[in-house]
Length: 432
Image (cartoon, rainbow, N blue to C red; front, side):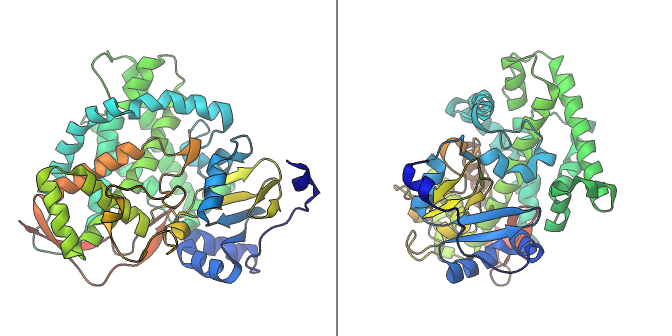
């Protein structure tokens, strides 16, 4: 710290005075509703006090977000900020690690997500997307979010894990859905492991243990195979380091599965929800699909991610007192750049409540204003994979169907740590 910072007293921005248990429930269940309220009341940087003596400072100005993302990784610990995920992701997850061990882990994973690797995945993504689209119900309302969840899970299992059809894959599909499909109360079991002795946390722990057993079986079997012609992520990791510990590989696989499955599925569900309600944009997206214009299809998903963020914030835990927005925050404070608040700010995006994919055509948003994949050295490794996957899925759908909305625009609700359509993004599909 500078001498001026040393002379400052530690302080926190203003925030709610509600009891910690109440603030915890509101933050876990409804931060997308209470975040804007707290910002209006307390300013663009405010404090939320959570259970287990955790103090969160929410940041929503782009310049502050840029400083946090560019700050030294030795001070801004994203892994510690994500500590709530460790019981599921694992201690060797790239999301949980910090500093040098994080960079080493990230470097091992990066080749599986570079441009050449992404091009190699395109064919399987397209094939699976088209098979899914061909099975859509025609002429009757249905919730598209579960369909997208099933599809993105299949893409992860087949493309990232390289799993073949069989008994193990059939068992793993429903288990992963059970691991993911939990509410905010169930997440308390991640914070308080002792709860795993009781229902429903005991059931959730068993589902995770069963999924882990299948992943370890897959890793053990893959070690016995010739990996020369395999290009899935698991095989790439094993080929690069045949002695990689099974526990580390499991954590990588579970992280990619959970971080890259439901997030992309939800972004796609919101994309289709918005397209169904905007006929002119739907026409433009169909034309892009017909012409193979993935830039426009990706812009649709980017705008859906802006308007309907799947994750509302990212987190960094301070390892030493640090100045943020004029406050010397104590060591241990969790600083959270708010994806939802910064992306809905009219200072950053004109008409922020409107769906305009054109914002992302031929232009990049100002740094720190569009952050669904985080930023800095912690930017999501799978960002390119997710956007390529989204374009492949939208293309498969839009060349086949007209889509129409069902009912009014859907509200956002919390599922685990993601924000999803309240009714599953209901639409009607009709053959073009």
